[in-house]
Image 1 (tube, rainbow, N blue to C red):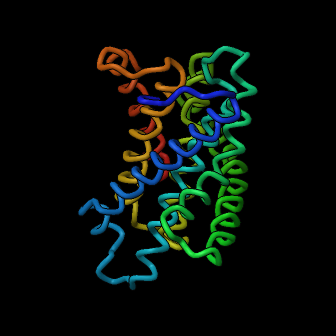
Image 2 (cartoon, one colour; image 1 turned 180 degrees about the vertical axis):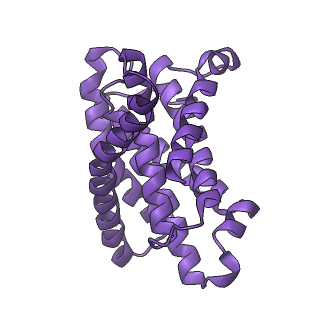
Length: 231
């Protein structure tokens, strides 16, 4: 994290970091929500303001849950001693989100609903990881024998795919048939957020050189393959 102040304890640092991560997720959601192509594909002109607000909420929660799933990802390339800190950080995300909303002036009566929504989506998307992993393994094994490299690439994509599929489903209220372009846009935007966060978490800081070294092309080839499998 850039421009982070000095802290007196790990607990204080975790609380501040959780807030920054929640703000980053909100920034991601705001960018997607205001994207003209997204609004066109989500058919905003046919929807009420209440539906617009609901979709925005789903985008925000998607960012939060993706952060949480990455923080607990078993394949993170981090020092084992940091695991406990990330576990603590993970647990702080829902509370940090509610505190952030409180600072923005959201009425107290709505904060409980936010807590429930975050808990519900986390449980759902965490559970869906198993189905996503199984489907990806089926697709990969249909073309070649699975090896450690294939399994590691599948595992890398699991949090991203689980959240993207779930978010798309909720935005469409379950009516996803014929709306693959909207899914692709959600997946692409979440991919950028995911890569920025994950690479920053694993190496501490993202530079243009580090970006170049990340296997982005392989990642998106895998995503396109999975998209083909969905159609």
